[in-house]
Each structure stands twice: as C-alpha cells, then as structure tokens.
Length: 105
Image (cartoon, rainbow, N blue to C red):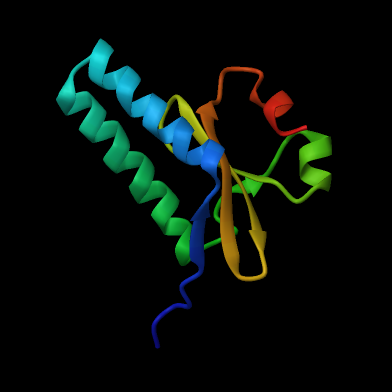
C-alpha cells in the first residue's frame, strides 16, 4: 500500500526565498551550483509529502508553540513549515545561521 501523500504548499515568501537562493548561487558560484542547490532543496522538501513530521519541532519556543517545524535542507539552508489539515505549508526557506525566527514572529 503506497504511503499517503500530503500536499506541499509554498507560501509566497518561501517561493521568493527559493528564487533568491538560486539567483545568489547563479551569480556567485555558477549555473551548476544553482541547479544543484535547487534540486537538493526540492528533494528534501519533497520528502515531507510522505513524511510530514520529518523535520524537528522548531527549537525556538514561540515558534514551537505555534506548531512550526524545521527541516534541514543543506549545510546552510532550512525550511520552516507547519502541517495543517493534511497539507505541509512551507513558510520560509532561510539560511539557518541567521536570526530567521524573527521573520516568523
């Protein structure tokens, strides 16, 4: 029996984050890097369709209380998301080394 697939929903800020990350890699490192980072992020996020609780409960207490989860996509980037009524809603894709929780509060 196939695993249930949850719908992945990218909010506008997350889609814009992804675009900016790819553009950054394209201009700074080149097309191969941009393509690679995009494919890796999409692959990791795609796993949430089958395993929506794959990411950890967000370590920030306020975000955790609001139901946010965090999935590590690469050495640098993380996706911040919630599972809502069978949908995986991607709120942001950010550099995990920054003070990104303020973007969600």
